Length: 273
Image (cartoon, rainbow, N blue to C red; front, top):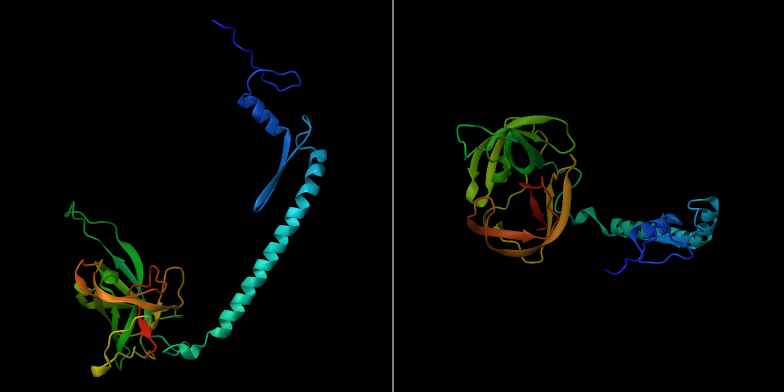
């Protein structure tokens, strides 16, 4: 058999043979690497000096222009963000909202404890879980109680429900009055805690109408991550019969492009009219 070519583990002036990974690692160890966000510089330093002060001196002149350019880019981006925030605040007007933003408390937060059935082992029970949702007060009684309209999947399999107003630490117990799973709607009743809350004005008679395409709407609710009322803006993008994900039944639905996150379920969608 032919004689195998010797492999030199350490690169040198007279080294021969194929380049092996050990040589590559050693060459990398002879280089000083310094990184900055967005880019990095690689300069060769004499073997044996590795991360020496001389190697640092070689890198500094090479990196200073990149760092300065990056610093100027960050400052410019921050200035652009500030201008965008100012423009947004100047263009936003509370008068555009179909309700009083400071006094609007009709949208409430629901804290639900639920227990799902175990269909595989029906003689056993699963662990109780907690979730949050939103609802809208549609009726207030003289004694402080009332009715809250929410989504059926928010209170499905519930064992205990609490209602919390916006910017309030108080929580009052609630109970389910009626559920219509086909169109994902439910009514929840409370006996107290709604003093000073004006119900959502519901259209009556001829005032009931379907929203038009591209009509502006506001979605109100309590997405996860906070206790304050969240308001997002969008337009109606579709009005048609769809299959509901909760019941898989087909019914009329309105699709909007406003941001809706977990916890917004059951909240109100208000139009300007």
